[in-house]
Length: 84
Picture 1 (cartoon, rainbow, N blue to C red):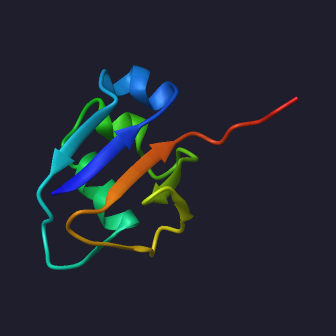
Picture 2 (picture 1 turned 120 degrees about the vertical axis):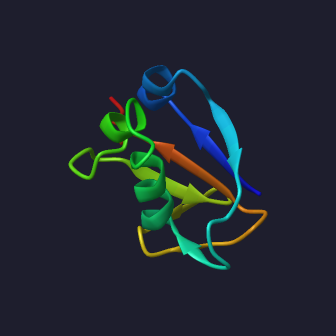
Protein backbone atom coordinates (compact mmCIF):
# COMPACT_ATOMS: atom_id res chain seq x y z
CA UNK A 1 0.00 0.00 0.00
CA UNK A 2 1.07 3.57 -0.66
CA UNK A 3 0.03 5.98 2.06
CA UNK A 4 -1.20 9.34 0.75
CA UNK A 5 -1.41 12.47 2.88
CA UNK A 6 -3.04 15.78 1.97
CA UNK A 7 -2.24 19.06 3.71
CA UNK A 8 -3.64 22.60 4.01
CA UNK A 9 -6.11 23.62 1.29
CA UNK A 10 -5.84 20.21 -0.40
CA UNK A 11 -7.15 18.54 2.74
CA UNK A 12 -10.08 20.97 2.74
CA UNK A 13 -10.85 20.50 -0.97
CA UNK A 14 -10.69 16.71 -0.81
CA UNK A 15 -12.42 16.35 2.54
CA UNK A 16 -9.78 13.96 3.88
CA UNK A 17 -6.28 14.13 5.23
CA UNK A 18 -5.05 10.63 4.37
CA UNK A 19 -5.82 7.46 2.46
CA UNK A 20 -4.05 4.36 1.20
CA UNK A 21 -3.96 3.10 -2.38
CA UNK A 22 -2.67 -0.08 -3.96
CA UNK A 23 0.30 0.46 -6.27
CA UNK A 24 -0.91 0.31 -9.87
CA UNK A 25 2.41 -1.05 -11.12
CA UNK A 26 5.60 -2.44 -9.62
CA UNK A 27 7.08 1.05 -9.82
CA UNK A 28 5.41 4.44 -10.08
CA UNK A 29 6.36 8.09 -9.91
CA UNK A 30 4.89 11.02 -8.04
CA UNK A 31 3.51 12.34 -11.37
CA UNK A 32 1.85 9.00 -12.15
CA UNK A 33 0.18 8.90 -8.75
CA UNK A 34 -1.04 12.47 -9.21
CA UNK A 35 -2.44 11.58 -12.65
CA UNK A 36 -4.11 8.47 -11.20
CA UNK A 37 -5.79 10.61 -8.54
CA UNK A 38 -6.91 13.22 -11.09
CA UNK A 39 -8.52 10.45 -13.15
CA UNK A 40 -10.90 9.84 -10.24
CA UNK A 41 -12.75 13.01 -11.22
CA UNK A 42 -14.03 15.71 -8.89
CA UNK A 43 -12.71 16.82 -6.42
CA UNK A 44 -9.26 15.29 -7.15
CA UNK A 45 -9.22 16.49 -10.77
CA UNK A 46 -9.66 20.07 -9.61
CA UNK A 47 -7.40 20.01 -6.55
CA UNK A 48 -4.51 18.17 -8.24
CA UNK A 49 -4.91 19.44 -11.81
CA UNK A 50 -1.65 19.92 -13.73
CA UNK A 51 -2.05 23.70 -13.71
CA UNK A 52 -2.24 23.71 -9.89
CA UNK A 53 1.09 24.34 -8.20
CA UNK A 54 1.32 21.40 -5.83
CA UNK A 55 4.42 20.14 -4.03
CA UNK A 56 5.05 16.53 -3.07
CA UNK A 57 7.18 14.66 -0.59
CA UNK A 58 8.06 10.98 -0.56
CA UNK A 59 8.81 9.61 2.89
CA UNK A 60 8.99 13.17 4.24
CA UNK A 61 11.55 14.41 1.67
CA UNK A 62 10.63 16.90 -1.05
CA UNK A 63 10.25 15.04 -4.32
CA UNK A 64 10.17 15.96 -7.99
CA UNK A 65 7.41 14.60 -10.26
CA UNK A 66 9.74 11.92 -11.64
CA UNK A 67 10.66 10.63 -8.15
CA UNK A 68 9.97 6.92 -7.76
CA UNK A 69 7.34 5.65 -5.35
CA UNK A 70 7.27 2.07 -4.11
CA UNK A 71 4.91 -0.07 -2.11
CA UNK A 72 5.13 0.99 1.53
CA UNK A 73 6.08 4.61 0.78
CA UNK A 74 4.25 7.68 2.05
CA UNK A 75 3.47 10.43 -0.46
CA UNK A 76 2.32 13.82 0.77
CA UNK A 77 0.78 16.52 -1.43
CA UNK A 78 0.62 20.14 -0.30
CA UNK A 79 0.41 23.66 -1.72
CA UNK A 80 3.47 25.91 -1.66
CA UNK A 81 3.79 27.77 1.63
CA UNK A 82 5.02 31.30 2.12
CA UNK A 83 6.26 32.76 5.34
CA UNK A 84 6.41 36.24 6.60
